[in-house]
Length: 97
Image (cartoon, rainbow, N blue to C red):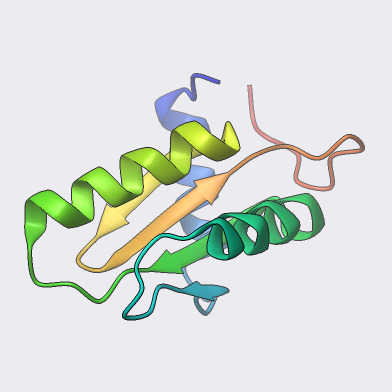
């Protein structure tokens, strides 16, 4: 899903007060973690994921894999945080045009 700059800005504003829903641990990205991200996206539509690794390339690869595996849109990446958006079957978040 492609987001317009206005939609991306709207989602960033909504995500600002959110706490990370999923934290990647020492085992990294596992099937269980992906399943939790799927559940969180179905329930919340807009989530934050935290990957506390210092290796920037590894972190970028993990974030890219998460977005591809979950069919979610990367809204924003700041430091160790990734903001993901995927509309639910019955969307709660209304995006501006």
